[in-house]
Amino acid sequence: MRIYMQTINTDTSAGRFCQLLLHPDLLGGWTVMRETGRQGAKGRTKEEHHADLDEATEALFRWRDKLIKEGFRVVFVQGDEKPIS
Image (cartoon, rainbow, N blue to C red):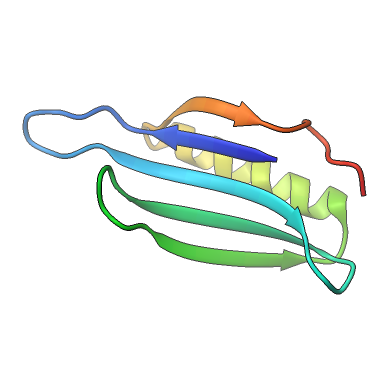
């Protein structure tokens, strides 16, 4: 699953983006990856590892909700709401 979010460009600041990715890892767990940065620039990546899909999905949606409160808006969502394990 992939959620792409961004803030609106203003005269005083460049827009920002955040991409949230949920994918399985090689050890049977799940990874939530966050890539954040300014529009047009290279982003920073952070990963969280989770033991099961439900835990990882909850973490992904917590990040989405936190970013919405910070002024981001969802631009698009790709993939199922709950991936097949």
